[in-house]
Image: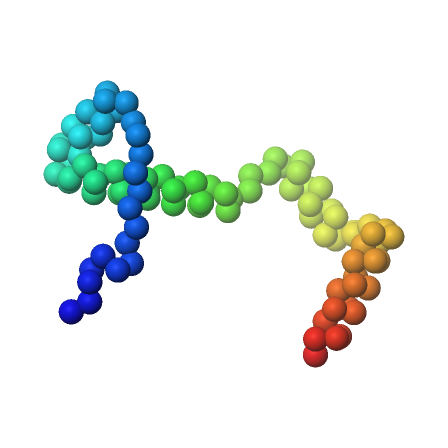
Length: 95
């Protein structure tokens, strides 16, 4: 039987006693161990932060500007032309 700890890592944090007491009380109230509670809470917050980073909120005027630029793109400037040339060169060499 494989070791269940093969794919786990340990995280250690130093926290004030008052924080530990609050976490322990919350864990007890939720029916989890302190470790389970901390992992669940940290994971929930991490997922929320990651999900929030995927969301872009624009004002109505920003949306209008984006759609206007999509429908009427400006002419490529020198830097974009150089980037497009490098892109084409790179991908033509690798194929």
